[in-house]
Image (cartoon, rainbow, N blue to C red; front, top):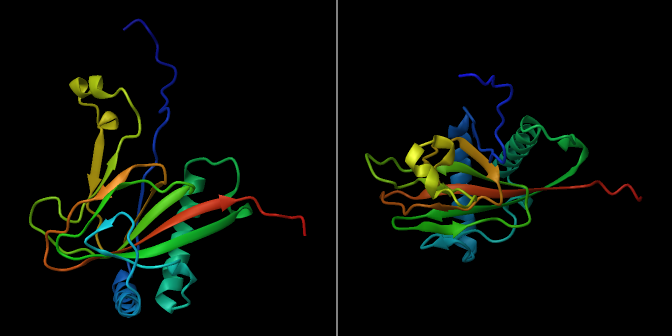
Length: 209
């Protein structure tokens, strides 16, 4: 090779983060209790959920202890991720709004393909994930937002795959840009799949006061 390679960059890359909370057992048990209480009081709303239950309003406005803990974990993840990707603005100098909801997918329940317009980050914390021996049950799949990629299939380059699916486990928190199209495979297990999803939006601090 006669040319000398001087620089290699990843242009227009889509960041994806996966965090884990080691002490998830007690937290998740408490979140399941809160979920049962909420479900007994409200019918839920219809969003991307198909055959499952989606809580009403902003879950993070709830003052219950386990929800406050999860709010803090989500905040830490968002700030850490924003700093990691090289943001020129310190995220701690901005106002951060989190809006969360609980998803409960029984057998057959799933979430249709969707995005979360208007937010910076979207995240999912895994409370209960029924184990399966094989298949796609419990998996979340992300679709490449770029176009004109079919020609790259010949080269089988991982960064140019048109889909990426993962199966997070209880205690995992995944985080991704809100523009990224995603969906959740049908729950094929007997147990319920329970998650808390959230949107994170940064805004400038108003110093007019």
